[in-house]
Image 1 (cartoon, rainbow, N blue to C red):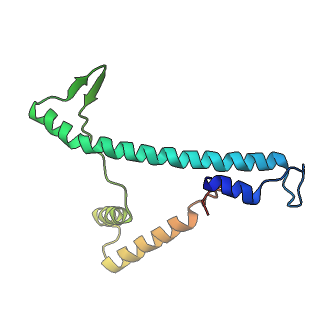
Image 2 (cartoon, rainbow, N blue to C red):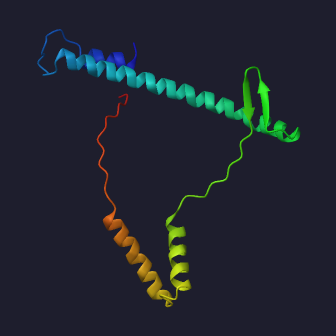
Image 3 (tube, helix red, strand yellow):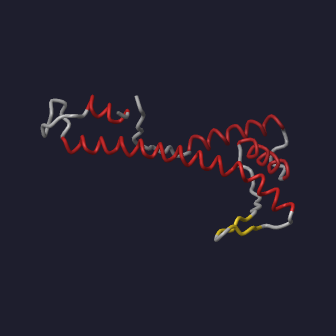
Length: 145
């Protein structure tokens, strides 16, 4: 018997339309389906993780081969494996923003005193933090207990 089935046996089995626990059969069915679907999703995600890991194990060998033969693609049956190169900028971090603000203020000669510059930047981030919108999210999480 699975953990979901144990949960169902211990907590949700009943035949009355409205048991002493106050949960209708319709809601019980939805709870049971939710738990089962959640379990299936977890299983599939684990399978996908394992498949991706296995696939990634082959990547280095294939990339080395494509580099060796000086090709960007290779046909395999009715599929094509392509070597894709891309550049992207690193994430905009707090440190990068500080350096950028300092550089701009110094270049424009708006603030030259290092202490005032640091105070200005600190206050700028305080204000930014104050005006940032707070997002509220409500969701369900299913855990095996």
